[in-house]
Image 1: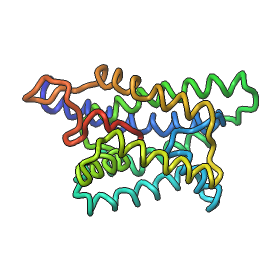
Image 2: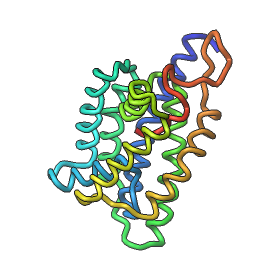
Image 3: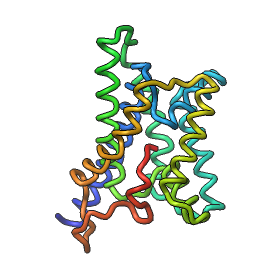
Image 4: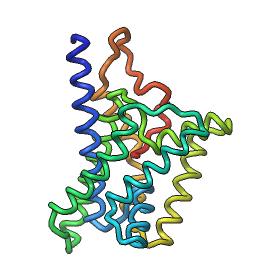
Length: 217
């Protein structure tokens, strides 16, 4: 594959993955059976402020990106794109998908949302344009404190889930299923969608982002 073709594929993966991430998150919102950790916070803030969840996602993503400055993290094209594309895709999908009222519809929506979220994570991270704002927060805290990425991720996600729940965000079976399945799903689709670097055929993903830091955002 030529360098130009490789770059084109990476860009398509990046933006399709980010848009799919936003759409899959919107399906979880529609299912109403529990959201991924950061979207529990986004939904709670949306309830508090009256803004859409997509707009809140953009505002929070930008605020988290500012925290990269003292953590000395370097954003990439994927980092900045993540802030905007995911939120826009969420709101667009929520506007297009009818409300789901019965469990016969909500449960499949939840399962499809989680699966597509894993696909989306593999797509945009394997594109190698840099981690999402929240991913970089985990790796930055890891580098600055010396604590494990797993510990930093767990601590931050517990904090955002609790805060979001207090503000009115939805926690449920979907939150639990997401927590136990997103890691294996993301690892699977990272391998499926990996674009080898021009000088390296390995499966290393975005520079500076250990696979253990995988998160949506």
